[in-house]
Image 1 (cartoon, helix red, strand yellow):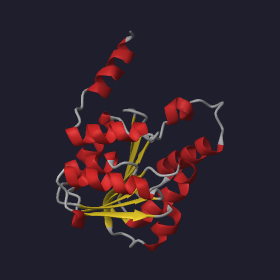
Image 2: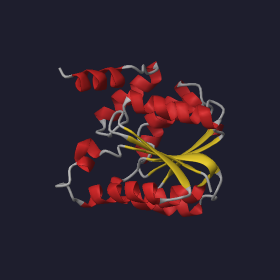
Image 3: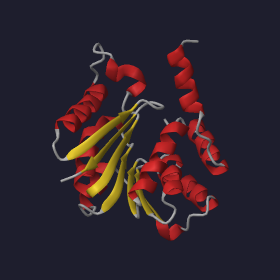
Image 4: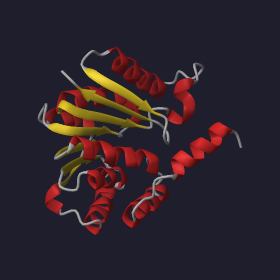
Length: 209
């Protein structure tokens, strides 16, 4: 195993999940949901804690794993999570309750993100996580920038798309959408950007104006 491979393995095995997070991961995999790695989850929790987040919105609930990590960093925050799958929300609600988060602080909205996001209040959220339909990532990020407050952070996991982003031969529609997000993020003067290689990648940008 090369030095880089050893480092990568260590990085992605460093963070340990809670029992509820482990359960959410197992159920997610049973449903074929593409979940974040523990290393990315730990970064979500860190950003939530550093931001002192009280109001978080998430595009793509899945079975609740990302939300559990976000609330681990900001346990007093209110989480609004959007997903078109009602069945996912039913299971996620049980997991949030199991983890000790009251229903009053976890708002699950069943619907398509592009139908729901235009109704959300702009400049109102400390963190916006974009992990919904990958074919709509560019549109969802555009809404995220409208919803996040100045000083708040937008998080986009799976940004590296299993290495396809770095492969110039890959030009499919979904890859093009993620590349558009990366290009626009680096060209904007209104945000500070960081790209993490942990897991399948995490794009982080904080609005400064």
